[in-house]
Length: 231
Picture 1 (spheres, rainbow, N blue to C red):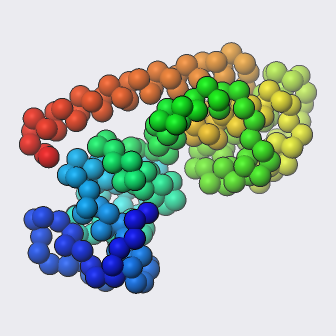
Picture 2: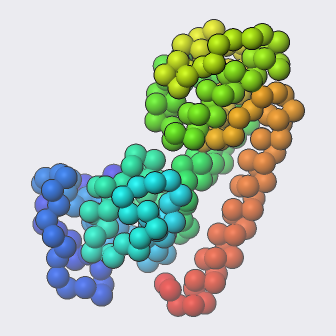
């Protein structure tokens, strides 16, 4: 995230006063996100504010319209997945909003050309543990459930139910095909249980379809916003 002076920035072109002091950080870092927000083009600012408004998972300001002067404060209160999305929008100058972690992951996979790679690759144990711990609750639950159902329906074995705390251990003894599936789920943020190969193919198809639909919707929304004079 860009560094910034400790002096509070003029947080919007409409306002001349400063927001209250930030308590979560001190020095230059305290205003880094606000500064980056104000340095961005207006479509990027709109994307940041709309992402905060529309973020699907629970957080302190879920569903609230954040005033521009409180962007830094809201960012400091945001959960890790929302912060990652906000940073991603700013760092890549994206003029469209996101509503969940899966949106960021999907865009990044297409941007970096890794879509096909993650459909067949296996995470290392360390990377699995890291991504699993960083994943949203719904993704962790789906991955844990996939260990149980895939082992039963595809590997034809019956195992004890895998808890979220036991997922990393289950990964070490999982079949290669199951490792591919749960690795893909974590890489993409997919939060629906995958119990067999047919459902995995369907999940990947839905992932591709969602990417096309999202891109089309963003292009149309961007054009509409310009016509409305929002930026």
